[in-house]
Image (cartoon, rainbow, N blue to C red; front, side):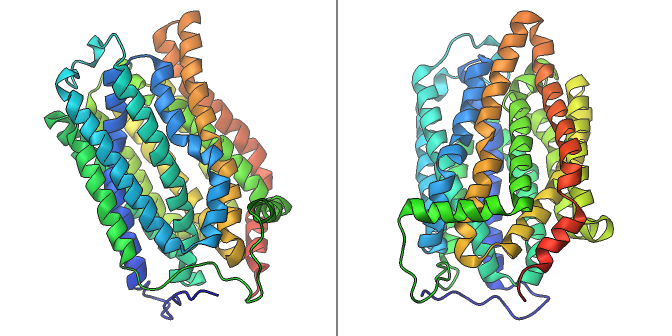
Length: 442
């Protein structure tokens, strides 16, 4: 049985291993934040077709549907730290390839203020974008699954909400407050520049995780005999499906993510054609994500104690319906920014509470597989949402007009969230969450 590093005994300090992971995650999320601007703007410079634009989002999330389950088995079989390093290094190489491809076609791309003149599709560059996005998403699936199973090995169980809250706040600040404005400025200099910097961030993230001491394989009995993939995967599936709370949570989160991706897949077109903003203002609008995410990550443990975990989850579902509806009505970007802040603040609370719960109640030797099954339901719906978003805008454009079509994606998003609030209020109660935590042996 492989050795792991024992989490620090102190109840106050999170330890150097956590801080290396924290800095690594922050750096890579700055790169991710730049890509939030660079990838959709690149796609909209190649084509104005909403289905092709949504296709990039679909391909990015497709690995969560097709690779999540195998990633869970891999996570429980290998050194989780090493897998994270390899995944980040692969993302470094792939992003560098995209940067070089964009650089080679840079002179033929329109300026960021000339996107409305795009009439055709740069087929070669679009194919490179799709392939790289698919592979980047695959590496992300493995990296994120390992990251969530890695945390309990370096942090005490009574510190998980604190550690996850700080991590989530840092991710949101880096992803939506630091990365996007930096990406916008670099994009104004050259289309390829954000991709080059993003590739460097992945390399730095890999180096920091590699510096964490110890090996981090799943704890298994000394007499454990490795079973076939399907057998191990079925074990994780059965564990999740037999847990009424996590099963409901996974399905509800999957539908939440489907709804959010439905509208998010056409957000860049909504911003350009309804809000009439460019990449710099688009970035400023995205500060709502950053402010809400940072605040939500910090206050989540307090909200959970004050109102109860179940009430906080219900508030997330209600806020999703309200904010999406008002975004669909809006034509002024500051309103959208405020809605982003409100929705993301409570969305962060959902993540902190549910991730910490899973890390607490799932046995260590099953954590990778159960997490992967959970994320299969929770994240596997995202490519479906992206496809629905692109098709919705295309169909409604023919039935009504382009403006209402772009707004309709957010109205449909709001309707789905409202239905989930009604269904989730009785299934995800504070009493059920507390009972699940109490059932874990001391």
